[in-house]
Length: 255
Image 1 (spheres, helix red, strand yellow):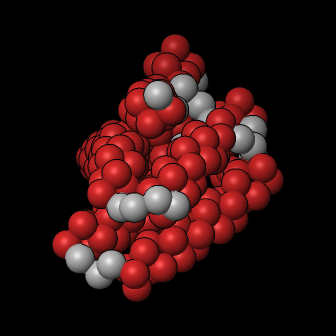
Image 2 (tube, rainbow, N blue to C red):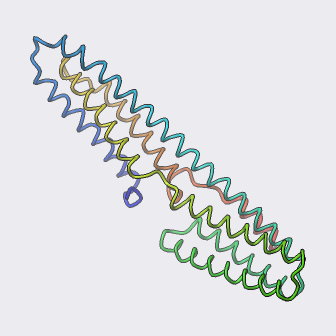
Image 3 (tube, rainbow, N blue to C red):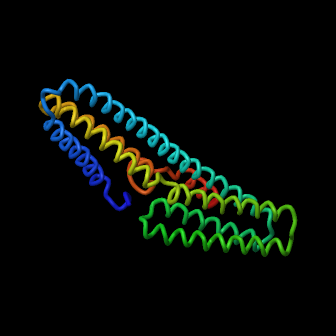
C-alpha cells in the first residue's frame, strides 16, 4: 500500500499525523487540574520516556531489518551475474547448435534482467514474463542436448542453468515479496503516535507549547521512517541497487 503513495507525500502525512497527536495530547494535558500538576507529571514523565524508548528500539530494529534486505538485494545481483557468467562459459562444453543457442539465449536473458531493474512496474511485469520464457527455452536446449550426450559436460551446463534460475527466484523474492510487513509499519505508527501523544500531554500539563523541542523530534522520526521505507522499496528512492556486476557480465559474454 505504501508503494502507491509518492515518497514526499508519505513523509508529509507522517509528519502531520505525529503533529496531530502532539496537539491532541496537549489539549488533553491542558484539561488537567493545575493543583495536581506535580502528581500528574510524576506519572506522565516515566510513561512518556518508556514509550519513546520503546519506539526508538522498534525503529532501530526495523532500520536494521531494512538495511539487511538492501544488502541481500546487492549480493543477489552479484551472485546472479556470476551464475550467468559461469553458465555462459560452461556452454562451450556442448556441441553446436546447442552451444550457440544457449549463449544467444543467455545474452538476451541478461539484457532482459537489466531492463527489469530500470523499468517501471508495468514494464517490469512484462520483462519478468519474458525472462521466464527465456528460462524455458534455455531448459529445452539443455534437455535436448542431454538426450544426445548425457555426459559430465552436459550435467555441468544443466547445473549452471539451475543456479541461474534459482538466482532469478531469489531476486524476485527479495525485491517483491520479502518486504517489511504491513503489521510492522502499523505497529511503528501506533507506538510512535502514542509516544508523541504522551509528549503532548506532558507538555500540556507543564505549561505552554514547546514547538522548539517537539518539531525536531517529529522531523527526526519522519526522516528515519523515510529512510526505512526507501531502503525497503527497491523500485524508488535513493537506495537503489547498482547493476554494475550485471553490466560487466553482459560485456564479457558479448565479446
